[in-house]
Image (cartoon, rainbow, N blue to C red; front, side):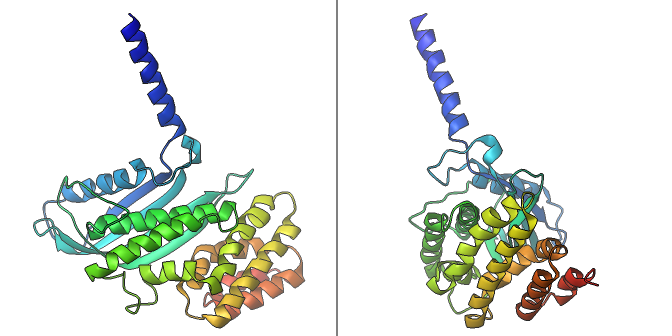
Length: 303
């Protein structure tokens, strides 16, 4: 009887620990393989399950997350080349990250990033092995890299530069992967790849964008229902900071990613309120981002 009690006590303790130390990510993986000519399509569903399990069951931080605090994110893979028999695939990936806005049912987009060099090897039921300290294969390195990018951006939105430890881990993934000579990891190959995203994030001359992530979300969106005009002013200050970075690095992938994530939301933010603030926001946005047709909506009700 005593042994049974000790067993039950241990079991309860384990369950409690699992509840307290829940994994951080709630990542939905979606794979489109319509371009691949094969009758063996089960592997693509297997990929979705395996990639999601890798991201969602691994502990990426030392922090305690409750189930409702998990970070909502997604990876959409559009596979363009490869066959199940070869086990080698080429895809483009869209990585998205959402964040709840306090006291609302609204979820803001923190990240909307396109990776056009997502090359990997996978066979059905293949174990996904990963180690922070070494490069094992391209697939798990890419998945880990985006896990750390997602964590860093989420943490940055809740505390100023709070994502620094995870961005350093993402940089370590890049450094470990560079000797592989696989696409996406090289410094000079493209200004839109994984290397350049993390280089921009860690670049001290672009730190105003990262600091702006906190101000935009905590001092802007999270307080919007309480004081919309003050929140708009805070968000306007953020896009001024983004403009400052843009004047130095006009082709920065971090600037591009900011607007790819926020363009539609900025229209919603600035479509009401002070006409002076709206016009100032419109002028900045159309000067540094190409989505003029989207931003035009800010001034539609100006007369």
